Image (cartoon, rainbow, N blue to C red):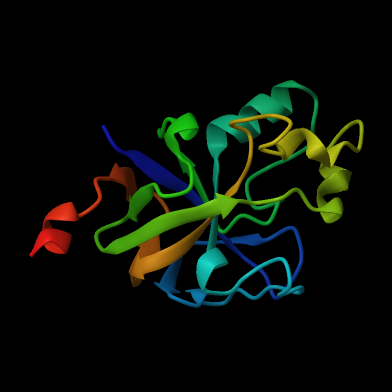
Length: 162
């Protein structure tokens, strides 16, 4: 059973990113979204940032005041086994959008305010595997909307063999 998009979030730079109902996804990222610091965010290999609602809920249970979009993710999903989402994984959003995870998103000091103990490293893949946001490149562009299905996609190796 596929997961779904819980929230799509954009901003004109910085956090939190705010919810929108739908967005166009291109190789440059989401329509209406921009990054304040292009040294660490954005670009073709970091066009979309994704995170798991289950991870956010777990952090909230630990006492952290974090919510979807707060940590700068563009797409918050539910229903995926987040431990399977790692560099090289392909993810389908909605009917057409296909992403490939490129890296784990490093925690940013600007996220410190969401953490009860100010230890934003709580979302570091190095220190807490499985709790990190991920960056992805866009393989197939298209439109996405809240409640669209999300699923891990099998890599299209057949087209590579032709």
